[in-house]
Image (cartoon, rainbow, N blue to C red; front, side, top):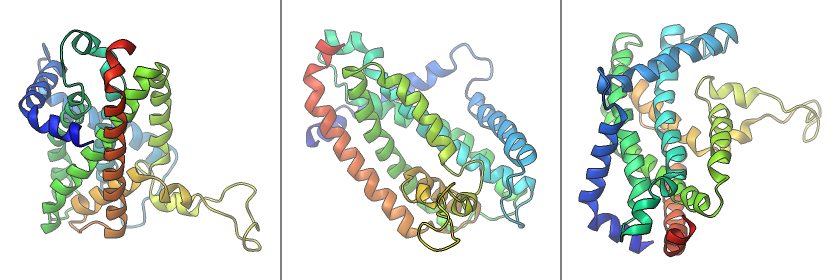
Length: 281
């Protein structure tokens, strides 16, 4: 793991170059360029608002009308989109760059980092829309807790890169990993309170569990929130951005610890298999 961290520091200029190249390549030849980073989350917001708020009538509390709900959803969509993009692209990054890995001495460990940073920059481009909505629509001021944004970004990047290392290595060993990740990301997204309030999960009873622990009392799906790190992260983002409040520290510290552990495990797994990548690809 220390070898990967040392390599990332040594090749930090190469990482910056790859991030800049990736951001340019996203919208090469596009008339509106980076403005698409703002349009995509807004389009997603309109679709999910129509489905979850108006068709399925998902309630976000009596104090949150459609406008406040839209900002609540948009904040979650931006964070999730950056995370999901990092996972899906990192999974296939070794295969897509096989020509570099096979022909020259190339620091392949920079690839998931490059993709995570590129996705976060893309997320930050769309973040002013959320901030404008918070101030003008929800009428909540941006509080001192906004200073915690770099800490949220750091833990988010560590978590995404760690998973990226694991998935990229598995995909080099077993190519079906890429397709499984696509399905898994969809399941994970709808298991995370992005388009519905967390209370809906805490109160939803599991079928056939009534009376298993207490007479007449069903077991709920709250355990899904207890094992979902992305719920901890998105909830922290929403508290900081929407309400100007610090995150739930017990929840955020859990995410921070998981992020570090996942990064360490992912980096070690990637480093152990790195020498076999040219042959596998």
